[in-house]
Length: 73
Image 1: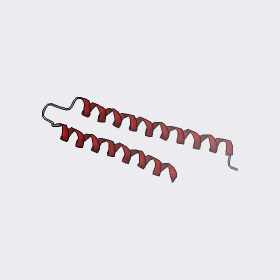
Image 2 (image 1 turned 45 degrees about the vertical axis):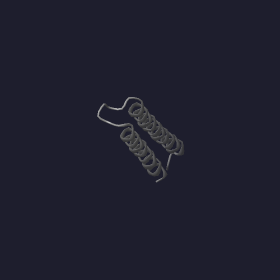
Image 3 (image 1 turned 135 degrees about the vertical axis):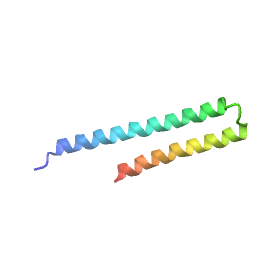
Image 4 (image 1 turned 90 degrees about the vertical axis):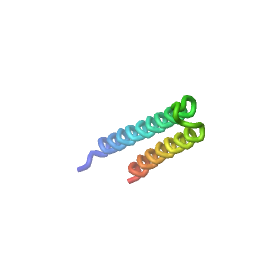
């Protein structure tokens, strides 16, 4: 016999952990984007910094999407 209360609690805890991981990854990538845009390395032009920040934000969105897809399964 399945203990439904334990099942529901485990689903909730797992979902909460993944949501926290997704939020953490989003804020980390956003922080890195702001850091690159505000203080680009000396050997990097503004255009290169903008391109790099776009890539960083895209990678953060891809990671978050992967977490959401994993959670849906």
